[in-house]
Length: 422
Image (cartoon, rainbow, N blue to C red):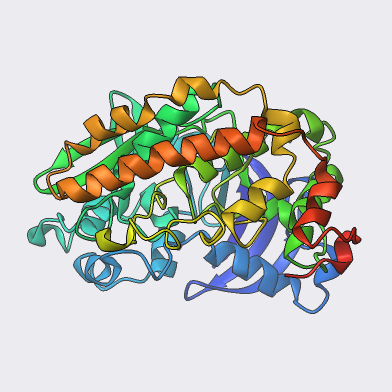
């Protein structure tokens, strides 16, 4: 079948889809509205068809998603590729969709920002799809294009689109971490997505409103990153990101840099090990392609040693910032926060507002009936220590500047970015 990839109602390119697989790009209709990071000249080793196919498949639920196999079975033994095609590739993160040549649908008729959607896929992913509904499935759902490995689903409540996301392991700690991170951002005046806690039976979930609307869309750092060819090492990644922003016309990046650094500071306080290129980025207006600024901080659940056994939370090495992994601009938490210009830009953050955050988190964790008193106490103690440590790093000593800091990380020898190694 022939489809037209549209950006709202703007035709972008025509392609052929056979058995849920991209077989051919037929024509480019509007080059300005091609998804960010797609078809750049440096990707000569990969065909345009393969690049577009990779982009299209990246819109589907990842194979690592919790309960995915059982969900697909309950949905009639379907596939994630088929689910995306059946829902036109529609998302609640951006405004791209695939319009079949056989129909006269418009963006206004199909988008999930303004129209209702089926709950069948979300119920299946949560293991709650009624068995007698198996032969009357409606796959028109934004859940088909939601990323991440944790159990999640979209719902509509009082006209608002809400994302419900679960946790993992015995304690299901991630939803509590999300609520904590949004509270920290609130106290530090950092733009953020507000998370609330939900309990359903013996399970815990976080809930948040969609920060994208029918008038704005999210462009991930991963897409932005691909606007430039990356040839350096790990320590070059932040400079590469800045260069990619400039190439895309985000010319006032300097005015946004504090928000990026503030996010890294929150990640440091919470020991977030999963700030990857897909869960931060920028907002823009889809009609005009005007860049609005950084997206609010979101997706901070993989933090506060959520995978660390309780008996190791008192082990100094296990919880040391020099050992905790970091993403996306450094290998370790301590290195990354010093690599970025956090001292220069964020020394005015009101860290004193976090003086009682451990007590606040203690009250929140008391709602978690799955968590032991010992673990709760250790986590709150570590949180308090991380706040003090962060404050000392940011405002406790005179800043040395971005390039000098990088040199310090490598033994005081000032190197060019392309020469930096792990």
